[in-house]
Every structure is written in structure tokens, then in C-alpha cells.
Amino acid sequence: MGTPHIAAEAGDFAPDVLMPGDPRRARRIADLVLEDARQVTDVRGILGFTGTHEGRPLSVMASGMGMPSLTIYATELIRFYGVRRIVRVGTCGGMSPDVDVNDVVVALAAHTDSGMTASRIPGVHFSHVATFDLVRRAAAHVVAGARTHVGAVLTSDHFYLERPELFRLLTAHGTLAVEMEAAALYAAAAAEGAQALAVLTVSDHLLTAVELTADERERAFHSALEVALAALAD
Ligand code: HPA
Image (cartoon, rainbow, N blue to C red; front, side, top):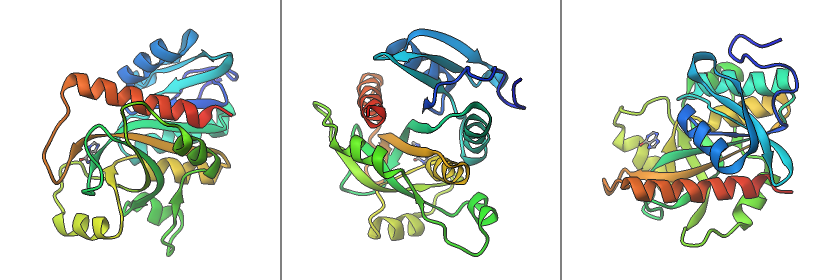
């Protein structure tokens, strides 16, 4: 079989998928957490791996960047490969003074001004929310040496567009951080009847212009991965 964007056979994916944006991150996560990992797809360089983690089947599949890309992969995984739970493991830019670089943000909800949502359910300001069970386990997991926040993020179509007034308003309304995929994941999971969560590390901050060193980035990535795995451990 296979789909337009995934060259895998039925049964090649586990019901649970960890989803970083970057295909090399997917390979890295597979190396770190999967036993008996095998690559199951590489269309467009978007790598997918399946193996086991602590005795349970688990897949890792990249999403690429932005809402359209993630929506294609998440929809096909759920609709054609029987995937039931997808946990995005990614990075975000801190918006709130309450979050620091290195912190972990569990995206309880994802605001967005994306046209993808406007076209999915016209006329409604759809609430993009994570699956409660996944949030509950992620929030309960304590990572040594890392702070975890649970709250709303902005899913933006833009990386480089500066919108200080919009960011000020969103921060004033409790938004913690900005990234580019969570709302799409939550909408696709809702549409396809699956579960979803995004666990993000704060890789940079809009207020402080602090950026992580390579070492710090690596440690922060491990923290998010640990929280993502805890979300799936039931
Ligand atoms: N904007 C959007 N996505 C991001 C950012 C950002 O500043 N940092 C990490 N992902």
C-alpha cells in the first residue's frame, strides 16, 4: 500500500507516534528510545521509524515544518495506518516572562490565526486542545533539573513576521510560547478521532533574545522527550 506521502505498508506504524519536526531528530529519537528500530518510510526525506520502547510498540515520524506539512502526515498516519496517539516533540519561542529558555511547555491549547483552521470549520473560533489523558500524565511527570509549564501556545504560520502588538495581546491573555504545528496536530487528531499532545522546549525567547548553546539545546531536548514518553506511558 502506501499513501501519497508515506511509503510504508499497513502495520508498519505503532499506534503511538512521537513526532518531531526535523527528520534528523526523528532518527536521533529512534536511536535513543527505540529497540529494534527499522526505518519504515523516507518519502521527501521525512523519515519514519518503528520499534519498541520498554516493551511497547512505538513509532517516530517527522512532521516537517508548519501546519500544512504536519496535517498531511498526521492525517495519513491516523486515517491509513491506524495511529491512535501522536505526541509532537518540538521547540518553541518563549513569549511569556514566566517561561525561560530550557523550560518545557506542555501545550494544553494552541491558538492560531491560520487559514487552515478557518477553512476547516468556517465561522467558528475552534479551540485546539490537547487530549486530557496525555496532558495529565505529561503534567504529572517531574524532570530533574527542568521546569515544566502547562498552558496555551500560539501556532503561527510565520517564523519571521514580527507582530509585537499581537504577541503583547496574546501574552496578556496567558499565552506561553509560539511555535508552528501544535494547532494543526490538535485539529487533525480531532477530525480523525485520535489523541494528541505537543511537548515543546523553549529554544529562544522573544523578550530576552537568549538562545541555547548546543549543549543546553541537547539537554532541553532530552527533557521534552522524557515528558513526551511519560505522556504515552499508561
Ligand atoms: N517562532 C516560531 N516557531 C518557533 C520559534 C519562534 O520564535 N522558536 C522555535 N520555534
